[in-house]
Amino acid sequence: MISKRVQEIPFSGIRKFFELVQKSKDVVSLGVGEPDFPTPEPLKDAGIRAIESDHTSYTSNYGLLELRQKISGKLKKKNGIRRNPENEILITVGVSEALDLAIRAILNPGEEILVPEPSYVSYKPNIWFAYGNPVPVPTREENEFRLEPEEIEKRITKKTKAILIASPNNPTGSVLRKKDLEEIADIAMEHDLIVISDEIYEELIYDNEKHYSIGSFNGMEDRTITLNGFSKAYAFTGWRLGYATGNSEIIEAMMKIHQYTMLCAPTIAQYAALNAFEHESYVRDMVREYDRRRKLLVKGLNEIPGISCIMPKGAFYVFPNIKETGMKSEKFAEKLLFEGRVAVVPGSTFGDSGEGYVRCSYSVSRENISEALARIGKFMEGLR
Image 1 (cartoon, helix red, strand yellow):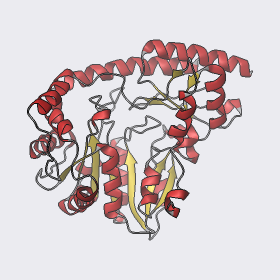
Image 2 (cartoon, one colour; image 1 turned 90 degrees about the vertical axis):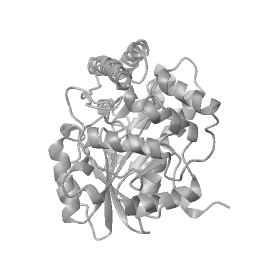
Image 3 (cartoon, helix red, strand yellow; image 1 turned 60 degrees about the horizontal axis):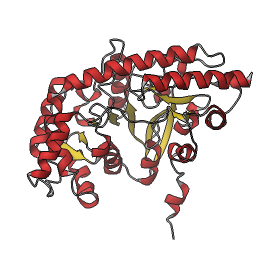
Image 4 (cartoon, helix red, strand yellow; image 1 turned 45 degrees about the horizontal axis):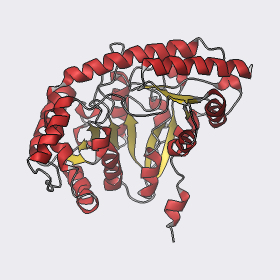
């Protein structure tokens, strides 16, 4: 009864692993990929007022024009991207839908999209669902898991349609620098490729690194689809609100799919997000706390024999190397869960380049991080 394509695609490795976590007791979880902060009060209040004011009907397929205008202003001010709110911005049900729409709007069956690895778990399946082929581009710990131009070049074929990039990256926390993006842009223009840029973690950057949007670079305006949203910066995950921006032809094509599958993003969430960009002090406070947790977790992991961990520059993940244990990442994560009572995500979940690593999230309290480190240290002692 099930389509062959759906049967061929595996379940999310993260969801599969956390079914085990839910069955376990007294576990400290470093696996959650969402903020542990509440949605800012002004956004919650705006959502409540939307309900009380009966703003509960459909919006335009593109989303509330007022919200698109706010996003247009933010893109111009913070990202250097100029977009017409009328027809070059689409409000979506989270960035997940924006990614799905972007891929389906541009891809023909059999075409390829280059995907850096380790990569977020939904990138490849979304390409498969569109009857395309994801082509992994490995990144290396020695280069802070940043995408290298020569690795892109050697994988381009006549079927290559696009490059998918994510900065900051989930799961590694890597941040692409301006020079990296300039080289990627040169490759895209030389080979007439589209770039899909996932920038959902743009606000979560540390150590004086800076976020650059490739869509703002010369020659990239018409060949870049920029994806972003409110989930990570505004602790807005359950509200399900994202957006995509690109040239009007691409955005109209994405809207065509969106209008038949979703119709519009949640109206209440759109009203709640209207004043989000006016409350960035909340974001700054949250990032400062993440920074403290990041340093605590990386320092603690590097003090445990058999584990090493580079300092990530963005998002809220670290990607420690566990190769000294001699175990595959899934086996290591299972043993750590059942014997050490700590949940992490196997690096292999994020592609072959993630083998030998695990993903740990510091979107949990410092108390939980300290407890997890103590348990991991004890677990590693037991392996020696």
